[in-house]
Amino acid sequence: MSRLVVVSNRVSLPDEHGSPPPGGMAIALSAALQRRHGLWMGWSGKVKAGEDPSGPISRREARGISYALTDLSQTDLDDYYYGFANRVLWPVFHCRVDLAEYSEARMSGYQRVNRLFAKLLQPLISDDDVIWVHDYHLIPLAKELRNLGCGNKIGFFLHIPWPAADILFTVPHYDDLLRGLSCYDLVGFHTDDDLSNFAECLRRQGLPDPITNGVCQAYGRVFRCGVFPIGIDTAEFERLAEQAARSETLQEPSQRIPGCKVAIGVDRLDYSKGIEKRIVAFDRFLRSNDHRIGKTQLLQITPKSRTEIPAYLAMQKDVAERVGRVDGELGTIDWMPVHYINRSVGPSELAGLYRMARVGLVTPLRDGMNLVAKEYVAAQDPQNPGVLVLSRFAGAARELGGAILVNPYDPEAMARAIEEALDMQLDERIDRWRAMIGRLREYNVYRWCDDFLLGLDQR
Image (spheres, rainbow, N blue to C red):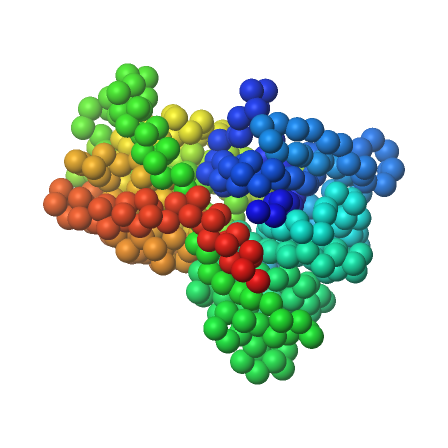
């Protein structure tokens, strides 16, 4: 079996005991790397002092996995990560062209850091290594490696949506992105829609029927494309939720207001998650259902992210103001309609909160997959499961047919869906949950990892 080399912007380093950090993808990748005596390369998370060029590589070993890390200069970090990756690609790929802030300096920095990663990685790889590159930060990496003479099998997986052609084409030099993906041997997406959008982008470039039976011919290369919907560590999340059900500490939130049903939302603070619109919808729900006032609460857990980017700071202020307005107008001394938490919650506590929530509100405006939807389903009590209310614009909607699908841009429809979920009879809730948990158990994160690597190995 060939050695596996994983490349990502950030590396999920093990803890002091050598165990991988929480998170299904990190655990699955770590397991694959252990089996194949692998190497994981990426940014260390540290910023070099001064304006020295980024690099070099530092190495460490843990449980059969090698880690290769590089620091980045502040200039490289600003241009590559905060600049092109998160002020251009992230908003555009999530259909927020209005928030994209393109500049030639940022594009140059994006290419420069990918070139750096290739230069640092090339001496570390052997001829028979299989390389798996992750996400939008590193689209040009295969092209840079090919320029250095790398003939290895190289795969790429996109963890966010791929946009429609007219949206992608708003990015200056968008053709460089398409050309960069053509240098991989296998390109993976979450959904058929993402793959269809990618094919349409190539077609609009004058390539008739560019993808046939998963084989793509573009820019003088032949490569393959496929759909690999990422899963979660379903069994582990079920275990955590069952354990939480026996914990008095994790049962406290459901006991504070007797008879109060909880709807839960868990999202990183990001404009793609639809948090503001969800709060508006919950407000509409309460005002339309007087009998739910004082008896229903939205628990919204929203850790901060990317506070260096102005759009995120503005959103943080807007969400806090909306929560304050709803709580101020509808709350009482002993009940607040929205309980807003602005920090991360550990996996055990989160599994317990999912389990006690009657409704899971997962309503992003656009999302590649959204694993919160899958975690909520996995955490439910099989004898008394809650109901998932899910945006039709999340990749998870293609798999979780037992959810109530909603349009997150329609607050009145979302309000009706919340009431439908709360009013749903037990038999229907169980039937819906069984349909979804069966899928999650079969297509877990380990299956996702194995399927992609099998496809890459079979080039």
